[in-house]
Image (tube, helix red, strand yellow):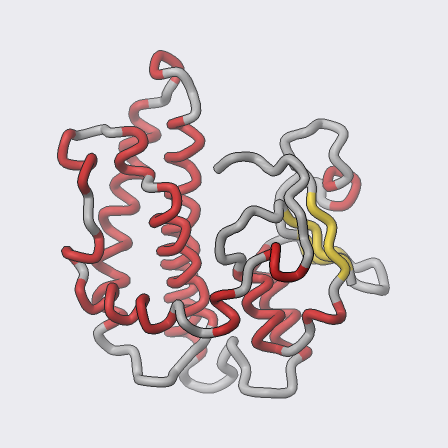
Length: 220
């Protein structure tokens, strides 16, 4: 199988799931910049987005969470995508964590633009998404069982890691208090859970640990 992705050095949920499922050795990696008009990704995924998993039979899985569920299905250990009554809660938490990642990315992209070219209403909406999703994640973290780990946790960790790395509120500074926004102080249960979860070997994994080098990936 070939995995197309940007290769940036942040927690990548597909790599985490592949590591948990024990299938990293089945993957061939292709890193590139999807912004380039002639990037190979456009020949693989008409959406032009990463990550994309191309199976040996040519089937293209063109969304990160779809890639995750397929790789999880190949594992022989406990499933990250629960198949019992826990499934829908885990999937709902998966979307929350992925939503934090998406809102962070959108704000960072706006922050790369000259101030006069930024879309104020769009930035305000993404900021509101962040300010609503973090307390929802805090409420969920209060109920996390010790030792439990599923796709919701993977996406929570990925979203928080990216938020820490990019600091989107301080980057665009829509209101003065965003300069020193401290999610750990506001959401202590989530912070305690994250500091414990991040020690998990799969969450410590970086593309560079696998010899994967970024190929001019977009700086988001």
